[in-house]
Amino acid sequence: MTDDLSMKALSGSMTEKCERALGAGCDMLLHCGGVMEEMEEVAAAAGQLKGKALQRARAALKSARKPQKYDRKAALADLDALMA
Image (cartoon, rainbow, N blue to C red; front, top):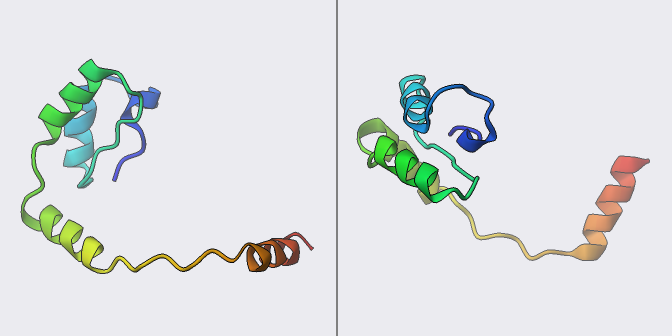
């Protein structure tokens, strides 16, 4: 998975950034900037997950667990212990 492609850490067009990221082995491309033209360009360049990338995505979704109930008191105690 890439970092946000819209944060200008890489040069080139969105399509070029996507092609380089996919070529480097990334399965997923992130675009968080909210510019519709860029989002459309990323979507077109990304295509659909297939092959090994799709297998990895399915395995990741299958291994997802239900979140634990949040215990604020325990979390604050953990934070205090870490900050000590």
